[in-house]
Length: 361
Image 1: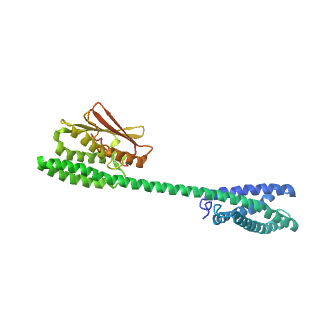
Image 2 (image 1 turned 90 degrees about the vertical axis):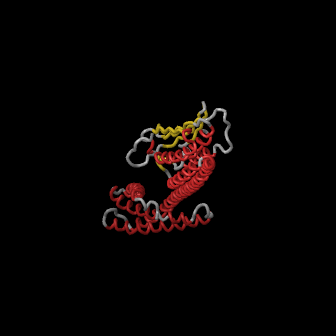
Image 3 (image 1 turned 120 degrees about the vertical axis):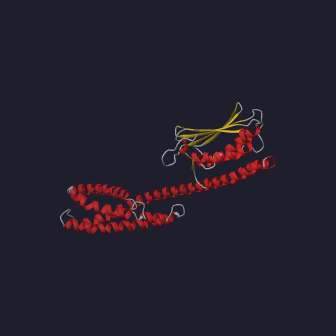
């Protein structure tokens, strides 16, 4: 269907434009024939509006002969045929109307004058139809560009979804590798602790799978999953592992990508707490500021400890996920100062629907 016909407002504006053109033709006719303006309007405005509807046929003519693939002689032939037919129809339909207006005494005309008027309309219709074709080619070019942009956006969305699925698929193997190493360390020294850790690990993985398939989860759900992870690690570290959480009121309702904090707390345990004989404290904080959610995970570590091989895999995974989800509005920053390693995430603050919940402490 023609794009103008799909929207009543566009159609009304289009017909109003042709009515204005008809009014201009009526003013010329009134001057030539020295006739009243209302009579000239009645004679020429309805046929001109009708020709506007006829010119809509240029839409299908332009679609059948695209500029990119049609040779010049083909375009010329189509133009001459389409404009000639449209102008002939306009002149043919306007002639009975002019005779009717003349016999009714609205705008007296002789038969020769009617025929001359029909010939004038035929000649005028040729450039008007060419203008219509030019406008329709512009509309087609605009729609083609918009369709190409839509396909590019769809491709980008598909690529981003594939990247997110691949990055999510990396999380569980990475976590399992670390967890199995922890269980292996307990098998000889604390078999009962290893058994409890296996049970907790199974429950944790079930929850991980439930959240991992979703596009986004609330920060409260993400923190709950992180708490489960700390329960697993406390089997191995006991009192050496301390956790502090500080979540600003309302921040727990913010939506975040699932399993976003998991790699960060793993790094904090593996590369921070595990390297210290006395253990340490992992601090998780969340705050809202200027429409953004600011998350931080920090852990104590030895100042002189060099980076271990493989360190940073979790951070890189999180950074790439943020780039895929919201490259312009999300970022990850790290700092190491005075024996504390800190990771800060900045995300757009998108609230989950529903009533506010209590603050996570």
